[in-house]
Amino acid sequence: MPTHSRNASNSVSPALPGAQPDLIEAVNASSEPLSVQRLAAELDVAEAELKAARLKYQYIQAREQAEQEAHYGSAGV
Image (tube, rainbow, N blue to C red):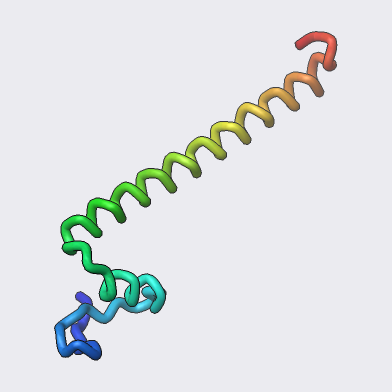
């Protein structure tokens, strides 16, 4: 469970171990409501997960193709 600390504006913010200070500062300095920032962060996460999944899929396709070419030769593909 995160502990809480007071920031310069005297508002309560959670102290998250390992959180990047620039991200914390960006959230605290934003004029957007937290609910909007949360939705934007969820979208960022989904996009990052999709990108990682696509890269994994492309790697698997390339590896399968390389194995097929090694097994059958490039003329058999």
